[in-house]
Image (cartoon, rainbow, N blue to C red; front, side, top):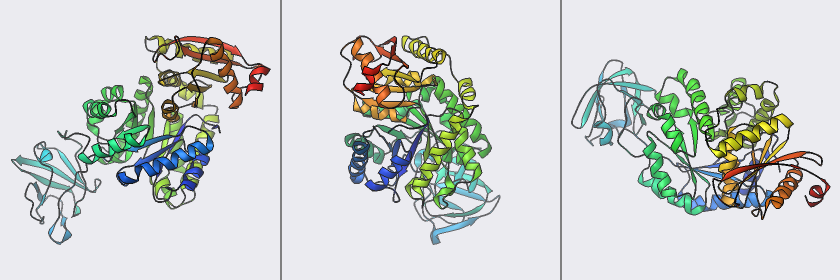
Length: 478
């Protein structure tokens, strides 16, 4: 099975889609990666979900990536007398360490790290930004605020802190347990929530030790202020627009999205655009025109992937949502303006052998109008670097590692195939041509660019480009 698009699709599994039949239908409709949301999935059911996806993978004989999304810290206020109270504009309201039920002028904040980090002038958002408080003064164990945007505050509503860097790790005890369970289950990607600093990512990578790649969810203003550092240490990033839109003015989110996508592309790191992309399809079989434009914008920007959350996890039309996203991406990539827009965002190659080879393969493919670039890769880095160039050719990644083949299912324009490593240069060229024909990307008489590293099986040693002609023997072997 081959896709008629280069942009990948992530679909979240949930109550509407967590059985084998539905997973297979979602894959057929266009899903390349399945997201398991650890906020809702009990870890004891994780292996069962992974097994379902692997069964679909075996059925269709195509590598499928699995992303385990860690919940991250959930900051909430405590409970109230009578379940809640109404706040009015201008009133004083205190957040404190007192565990007694809240009243109309105070509530327990069971996070001492927040109380010790708040400063006068900081904003405190409650219930996804529906209420806004401004810190007036702080003392040991409490912070007095002024209510700027009023409304009802009730038990255990979420707290967001756009101005405050909290001295708390991105991983909770639950996340650490979920991370180990996900690694044991054999997921391919780990998404880390609540990233504020590069050290948060380093902590997860230290635990993962290469068993899975790490995707940083960019949803905090503090992460945006250290964007380059975080992208550099991450294996991929996600534009988590939902929380960004709570902690930052909504009108700033589109510009931040473009900044993240461009920066990630410059570093050659996959970037996923997520949250509310086809939100209306939770209850409607068709999206709004604005949602279609939103998905299209991410595709035009050259994002590696676009993601569905509740649309595929708990919505009434999960298959339609994936199929709609698939059609939007296909149509955008056929637009006459697509390539000129995508190419304007291309970054200069870095001064490394791998980048020089990747850039050369891109230029050769364009000059000769070739349909296929075949990359022999063990770790996947060769395919990552070629995809960074956004070539107008399909990138076939040939790898002996099933883990690598699955991870590359997230990467723009890459069609990964697991196969034994090449024995010599002639075998490398022959099988690259054979797979290009077998997968339907090239035909007899076409030429294929082959990119590889010598000696074979040496990670990070991309140093060779070769052009091969496809002949009848390749077609007969396909």
